[in-house]
Length: 244
Image 1 (tube, rainbow, N blue to C red):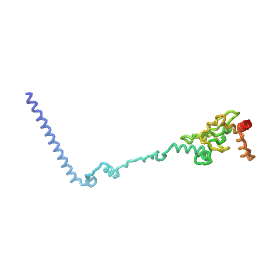
Image 2 (cartoon, rainbow, N blue to C red; image 1 turned 180 degrees about the vertical axis):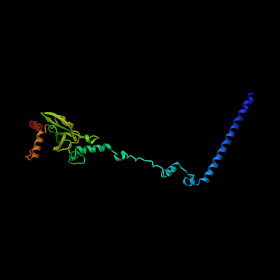
Image 3 (cartoon, rainbow, N blue to C red; image 1 turned 45 degrees about the vertical axis):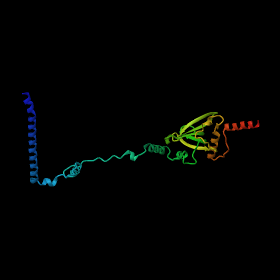
Image 4 (cartoon, helix red, strand yellow; image 1 turned 120 degrees about the vertical axis):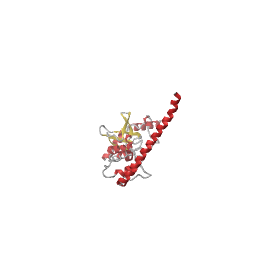
């Protein structure tokens, strides 16, 4: 009994498959007959909705049906402009806007520009006027110009009551009212930083007398060859050594 039941199972599956194939064939035939009848009874359907060609694509059908009567046009948002194309270098743009706001006339930019032959250099005596506080003058021993131009600064050295004093000043600081060149160095140094002036034998000394003569000349008074107090003392020492 077990053998007969096992042998009958494959035949039953095959019969079921054949029945399913016949049913599907009949359904396909009825569909084709209905389509042929529709073509005969409703010819307007073929004029308004023609049969797709062999090279039919869904995107083409969407474009054709988009502008038919009775269909609402799909709103499309405009493309947002690229920020990279509008401003390729935002850091440079922000720096330029800040410099134009802090230095409207461009005098400080020209004073320290590398393209200006009469620019301020290390070794020159500069006078910095501030909006709050007394002006400070001294020998410029360093001009710091890093990656950001807005952070440019100068280091001035002077002697106050025979004590060496150094002050950093931002070129584009809002507190700085103006920077003037009092005296230019006759012989240019081959160094970008004159830190050797901190040594006693190379120290220029006080430059207050030179600044007073410069201010007197600007006011219209006579100009004398003024030298610092320490410079005169060094000259006396050299004369004494020559006598010995």
